[in-house]
Length: 320
Image 1 (tube, rainbow, N blue to C red):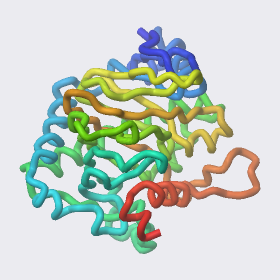
Image 2: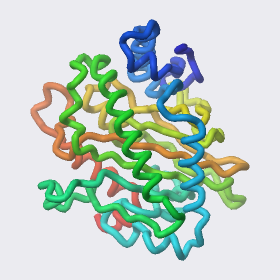
Image 3: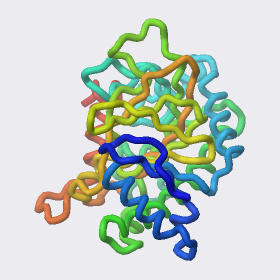
Image 4: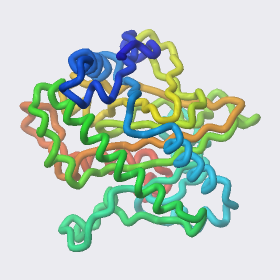
């Protein structure tokens, strides 16, 4: 069943879509799901997916894995602190990101990992930060295996969603395939503690922003916290239980489709309870031209992403 979940984005309802209906043309609800996908992409900039290939138990297992990492002593997490690198792999301490220059650095913690280039891949020789080696902690036991396994399944699922989106933007279902065979796909674990007593109006778990890339597939522990800005400027809560996903679209996709797909601002202020979310930022190959159709000036996806990372991560901002 595809029905509105909340109201946000452009003032339109955020669709709640059955992933099975969306991805299986033989199902009776397929056409309705496609129409809802179009509304989510072109009007709200957000949607939620249920009937996904991921069970609530699997999602909570992943969340618990990240929780165990974030509860490690700081000295252990510092061993893989991304602030010592020229990229965004490993642990990011509270205050390591500033997504809104008008706000204070975000008080959340993060763990980032990304696409691992196979041995001998020519892209590896270019030393691109968006394909930097991953940094894995020694504890908790099984952390790297659990996260890698989810990364593989989540990127495969995102490819299926993109195939459906191709029709929405007027392309054939295989349009994105060779543009995402080395995806700059970044998987993040976000740890939002309870909102600190010292927090001011300029302090956020993550400040208002739009995502930088194409498609974000967000799993959460079910705790509320995410808010999406409407056209009227109101902040509307959006949530999904474990096993379901919140999907939104980023600046790169909006640019690539000449504004047809919307990147909608969102934020997390933080509340009385801690919250863990796991977004997969699914972005194309580095050399993909994401300029608007008909543009005579190419824009490489990797250049756009690297520039936005340099503006956000404090250790990269200092280097830039």
